[in-house]
Image (tube, rainbow, N blue to C red):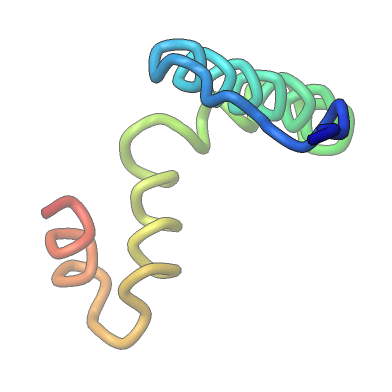
Length: 77
């Protein structure tokens, strides 16, 4: 039986897939930083990702129907 050259895709090792996911993630972060730094200043993304404002924004997005203090605690849990 003839097989097409792309009929089977062997799975990669889990550590290779993890590496690829990390590379994609950090490539996106570098891109976001370059775009946001032009518009909002060079420290904008770093400040957003630090504890505080970044967590607050995430808590508001993921737990939107609770008061900020409770949403923050539930988000961290």
